[in-house]
Image 1 (cartoon, rainbow over the protein chains, first blue to last red):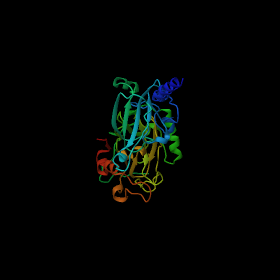
Image 2: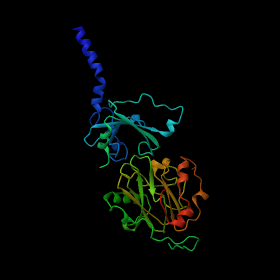
Image 3: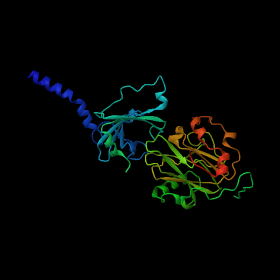
Image 4: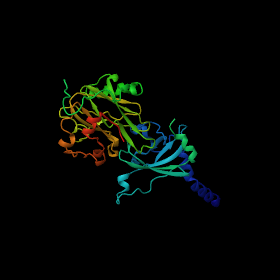
Length: 139
Length: 196
């Protein structure tokens, strides 16, 4: 019996990351995440990114969770101000990564927007194949 | 106000200016912007009288700009800022201590303006009546150099001659924004200066 309980505990522990991913797999994500377009004046759906959610306490870095028009998670995005990246005393440690498996990563400059006004880098962890990036493309 | 154009620059013509009928028809959001702006004091006119400054950005948000970036108009002419960037919000905000304690870069006595955030397809109107040079910026994108300059009638003293980029309090104008302003001479010569 003891062995059975221990086995169950191990299985449960092993599946925790999967459970965490399940909580954010569909919009709206559970927990402290809020829809970005309700926090700041931005379009509800951003072409190239999708519909974004973020825990306001994690701004500006995020993670931002990005969903397609059917509410399926497509990427996790971090927004890191350029001036912070060039500051030797500034670090971004232990950023949450709740989205599960990553297929590929994009990194590019962004000029800014409400919420993250200064120029910053978008680091996009895609949870879908390259071809499925079209799910968040402009219509 | 009677305006003389007997100075060193030719009188501006409507040719070459971006007219309101160049762009999408007026939407309900336009009226909201005009109403809010009216409360902030600048005088507003009908959309068909305005010239348009487009707020634009590329697909990944790495580059944002006003188009035109420099514009010469006649006193009493209305300006309409229109957000044509589908993935971002923009503002048209005058450089003035009244808004965010910024340096004054509009003529003495002119009423400053701040559109607030404009979502895609929203627009905002201001009518400029006092002659001189008016510098403005996009609040979330000033650090990306998204600024513009309007000259109403004759320029008088250039902002660069008469004011500092550093306010008594508040944040100074970033270097990238200062470099982005088209010169007064260029605007007076060309009438419309497009971003390069």
